[in-house]
Length: 125
Image (cartoon, rainbow, N blue to C red; front, side, top):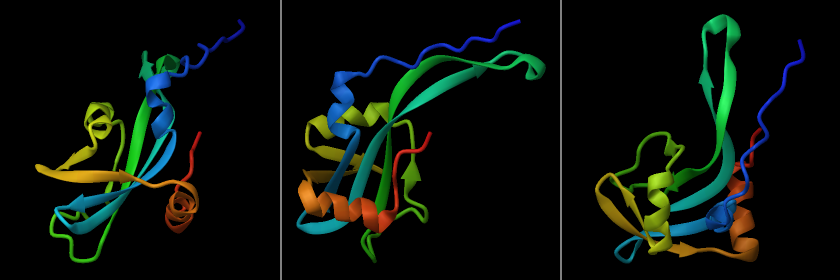
């Protein structure tokens, strides 16, 4: 029996700006963290353990926070994924983290690339 796999999801143009982006997050006038975003495919796994299959592929925004030393809300690993709910906030220029609203300033060019290099965070498949 030939096994087939669902094709990947159609790219969502609303997520284009987050496919590989970097930003500064500020708490008032103080730099709180850097934010890195990427978009990856996520699949739902279903079925019994001996016949598992991946279905319903979706694109999701993943993010990584790197906090400035001494930032009082810093979580030790600064990582979460699948934050589709955060996209509308990012579009409005802020990022809600642990109840605190941080201002987003998107980086471009060399400054953005430096953040990806510094944090060694690339797309994974």
